[in-house]
Length: 283
Image 1: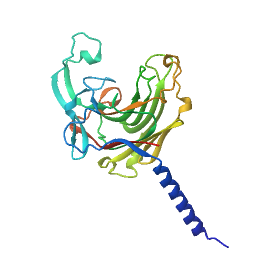
Image 2 (image 1 turned 120 degrees about the vertical axis):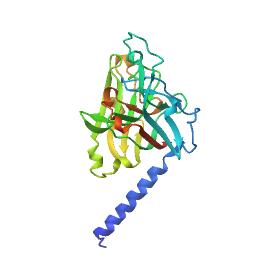
Image 3 (image 1 turned 60 degrees about the vertical axis):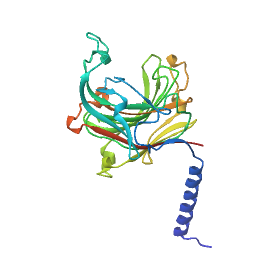
Image 4 (image 1 turned 30 degrees about the vertical axis):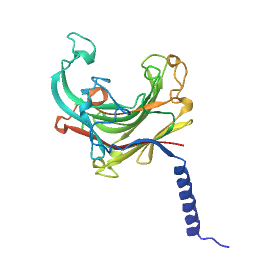
């Protein structure tokens, strides 16, 4: 019996579709936040960071800038002008030597409240892309100093040498404190806008598939970075452990300026980072 090429193609499509459906059935939703209740976040799940936190960023983090409205978590970076309550004249600490708070934003985490070992993490969001904006979706482990605790950047956006990029990164520790080994993929923003000129106006899905073998980071089902766990071994400072074989917690934040955010477009303020949902699936 002769089978046509069309018939063979049809059979292959049916089989691939069945395999895809079977793979998706393996994933079970174990936790989500759909942000459907207007007002503040559920503090049994989320923590708010407070103050100047990291990377010499311009913003002071506070809870006021993160609010749920219309089914979205909206994190807003704003222009401010008030005294830094932690200011110390003559201090060398960048957090304390700033006399004034010039910008505010929010950073929220699930530390000690929702932590996961392996799974599929999905975040649907619309990000600000103006100069100076530095939104992120990321995870950290606990129990060791950074970076030996492990860091996964499911999404970062910022300008590199004046050119906007989307990044997908994994970091772990080397032999000395605060020295990170990075597996980084930087994709020019133009890669996405070439396919959709209105990309920034839309929501997109960032996904991490993380298991015993590898961490895979996706944007709208396009694989951006894959890191095998066979190479994510901490150096001597991290006692040769693997930080991606322990539970991690989630962070959502909108930074501006700082070491990577760069010069802030004042005309773009306030900037809004909108998150539709956060979902975690496990097999």
